[in-house]
Image (tube, rainbow, N blue to C red; front, side, top):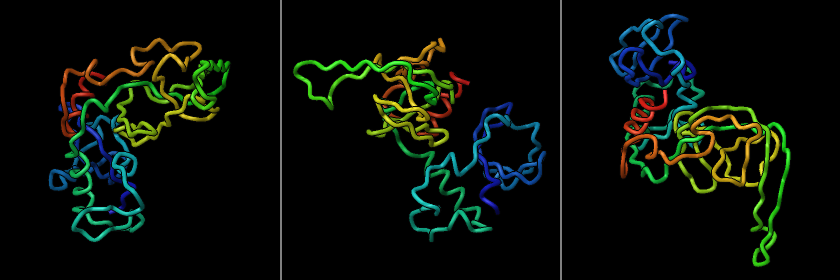
Length: 218
């Protein structure tokens, strides 16, 4: 089984997430339902995300506790290893305090930098108000706070927390120190707490968070 042909995606009618293996252009296999054959017309094709993009891995191996590592470069990684990695990821319990929704932009041009340094601030702690022109990469992305960066929970895209953005970098608008010009005027142009959009509280498995997010954002 070639891992590059494995996708995470949802069905059109039920929005149920599963693992699809693409056999041909129009035919897939549902790996979670005993290799049931599925036609492309049954799948929300826009939802398909490469397994290698959707499931974060620390290296080029499927790192599964208790199972010998299988290189993602192997021609025939075993199906059970792929399913195990997927289920382990979706079962992770995540605090909703760490989850936000925001548009992701790639910086195209820096229009202005206004560095404001209070007399009690050192140079490195000065506030830098940056106006930039950007390209919208993803609207309403589901982000988890990883400390020094944010990670898109669907695609594992990394967005640096950087108040001094450079051309080419991915950014999110956390506060008023980063200003998009002209404004895209979306409800998630500026970062919003997950719970301000999706009615959930406390913590939940990643699978549940993704399911509820898609109900309100897709």
